[in-house]
Image (tube, rainbow, N blue to C red; front, side):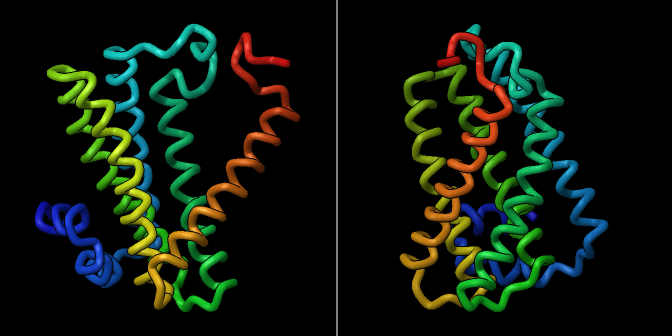
Length: 190
């Protein structure tokens, strides 16, 4: 498992087919997603102890480990559905189960990098922030490689552009929904 994690972080093209060959069914992946979400919430809680959120964000759901875990869990399933549906819409041949394997596994890989960042925060906060920024870009690359492998797309660049476009549309949709519902941090209302 550790070797596959290292391969995922260093050479996702080789790791993706190994992840897709896992014989996990939907129920096992749901449990794995719940575990990843719980670990993510725990990580977020520890992170907030080291670097507290600004005061205007304290009452939001992201301020609590349980809230963060719920958001992570929902995100895993939403992203899996998007990977499957959008990929199929563009001629891909991947299935939902492998899309779910992708989101669970890549989320776990991202969590491993986040733990490294957490340790770095204790030693060198500035370096940790630079590492976190690099991690965001690298994790996006890893997701794109997994999506490309899942759907059999030829061009990684086109896959990355499609993933970025989908992310942008979803972000705008979520921001609009939150604005309509009035879910904004205190002090950020118009």
